[in-house]
Length: 220
Image 1 (cartoon, rainbow, N blue to C red):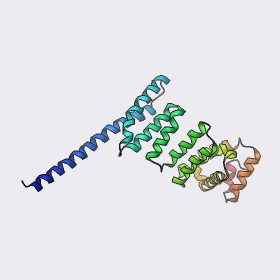
Image 2 (spheres, helix red, strand yellow):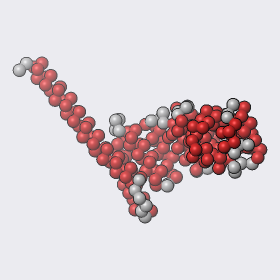
Image 3 (cartoon, rainbow, N blue to C red):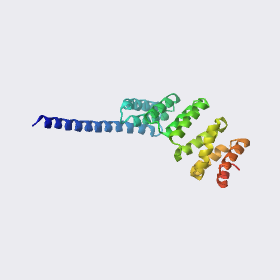
Image 4 (tube, rainbow, N blue to C red):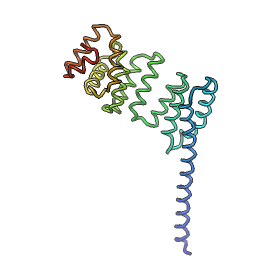
């Protein structure tokens, strides 16, 4: 056999081994990933047992955050575990780590905004995360719906540009907000003072929103 043929055979063997190793690694990772989400979705258990399971699965996932092919999914699973833990101190770092792997996830940027709001971060920091959600998912329906419901309770605190984004989303969604979304938003708005409702109504109507839908929101 010629040297060229030997070299070609060795290359083929190397490629086959690399593919096989990658397949084995993927199977190992998926087993760890499934175990992590099983903990997230587990039925009610004692706080101590749940915390122990979350810590164990977080430790098992950690090495995979450096694996090029699996890091995005690993970091998303870690963020899900952090949410399930109820520990605010670990939630925001986990979301930021997930965003480093997938910075184009509009819902994850919104999750960061929610985490900041929950820890009473300055409104500018909350708005900055919402802004990024809008930048990467400007017209994704679910992201728009969630942003509207998230921003509505804090209308009075929002900077003017964020208020405009809220109105833009609201008018663009219209009936696509859905029955549940419309009911949830109406419940939020009923808690607002009359002057706030009048302000939101005037902005929505000025954008040409349908009268019946505006009334369904309680903006009479």
